[in-house]
Amino acid sequence: MPSPPQVTELLLAWGQGQSAALEKLIPLVHNELKRLAHHYMAGQRTGHTLQTTALVNEAYLRLVDCSRVRWQNRAHFFAVSAQLMRRILVDFARSRGYLKRGAGVRPLSLERAPDIFQRTDPDFVALDDALNALAAIDPRKCQVIELRFFGGLTAEETAEVLKISPDTVLRDWKLAKVWLHRELNRELPHDA
Image (cartoon, rainbow, N blue to C red; front, side):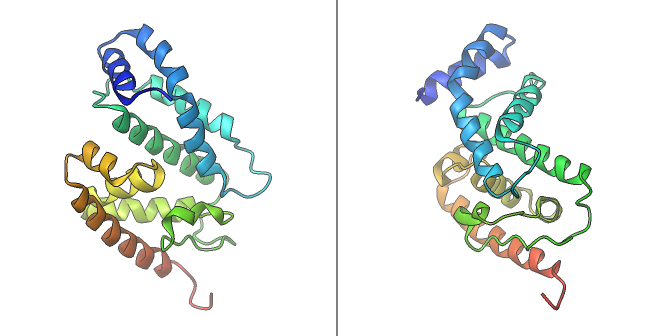
């Protein structure tokens, strides 16, 4: 496992236009990106046409286009990677016609956030819509959810990225989960 300072150093060099830094960075972060992608794909239905490797490859392609990002550190990189993977999965779901909320999909619950992807067929479109609504009223809480839930960052890493205290992260995490739970359950048909 590469050290966070080593990854941060390469990210800063890449952000300054040193393409050789990207070539050194990719092998160092590949396993962590694959772990993130596997985390997302674990909850997909059997036979899902987008596979873990394809998700990682698509994330790589989009990361290479992120040359204008001023990377802060390793945690920031993985936070952006997680956001890209979320966007890829939502775009994939939308392109496959999963536009109607709850179109035969069991509801997505944030009550047990660490175990959330153990379920099958999470409704990424409904979650994305709810996160966008949360971002409109409280962008930081949305970022906390993205970093912790999608990025797998700890409270301390999330605090570092957002430049807030870990206690604030935990408070935002709790409030955002409650808000999202309420918002997602509002989408359910009343007979469910």
